[in-house]
Length: 390
Image 1 (cartoon, rainbow, N blue to C red):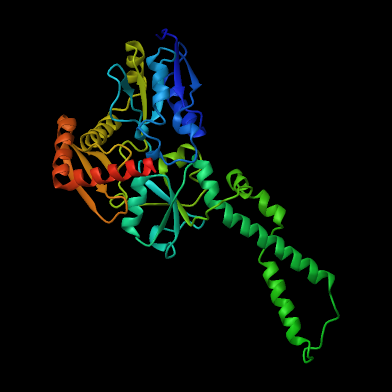
Image 2 (cartoon, rainbow, N blue to C red):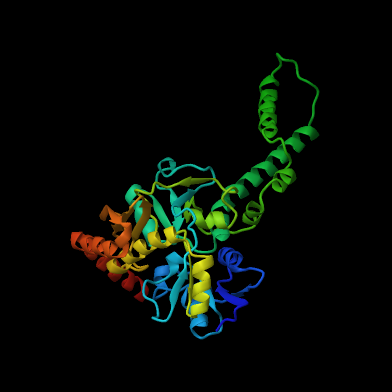
């Protein structure tokens, strides 16, 4: 039970999770109300080398935080909404959904190119079944590899090989320059037999002059993220990775790495992506959160997305993208259900009335199931179960 002057929030310990929780903390805190953050370790945080769908039940990053609230140890819990299962304990309430950040996905490459510009058979990293299926649907030639970790960890794994190669080239260029300086000889006659050799030396000098800074100056010019990447050993070199734009922005890294927004028509985001949810059980806390933190537009859009997901029944074990955007008196909903290799897709759009958005979303999902979405989800569920058993 919370006092009127203190509210305790549960959060995961990652930098991104703490920044998300801090946005809730700042909205809720006032002169008369202190808001504290408490880190809680989750199953998803404890297992670093396993993909999300193999962690067992949904809610790998959620349940431990909510249990602290249910037990009365803490007042509320802050989650990434896309991590939350659609089924929740009856007494637990999504008390607030703050205004959502950009909900789409971005392709991150060392050179900032788009998906169509990736070389043939390029290697792309992602931890998401949905993103993998969407990537293969757009580019069947791609090799999609498993990638987990915090946002900065994933970016470091991508950037490390190219940065390390660039550093090596700069070191080698300095070595060539030092060698040329040490071996200075009298100028040869332009017509002599040494003219060709001198021309070769000139080429080497031109190569070295491509670098206007020493390796140390170049290293010092890198961002903190790039410097950390320089020291990282990478087992699988990747040409690109796919991340949520919201995660990069909230981590403060959006201006640090070159990104390319993926088209939302082909890469429909995960339901709830870019949104934060705050759960609570105490009536007083719920009232405070709804008054100070909740964003009505975001709540309606995410309610549509999560209602469709609940009716489809895919959870985190099927490649499903759902996006909802309020447009006047309607909520424009787009749904994409794929098989795991992206060769089959059921997709549709529908304008749902804002005044009856939840019921209309459920009806939309039921129609999609009849159109073949149920079969794709069942097949994905069986494949995921077999993968877990292996």
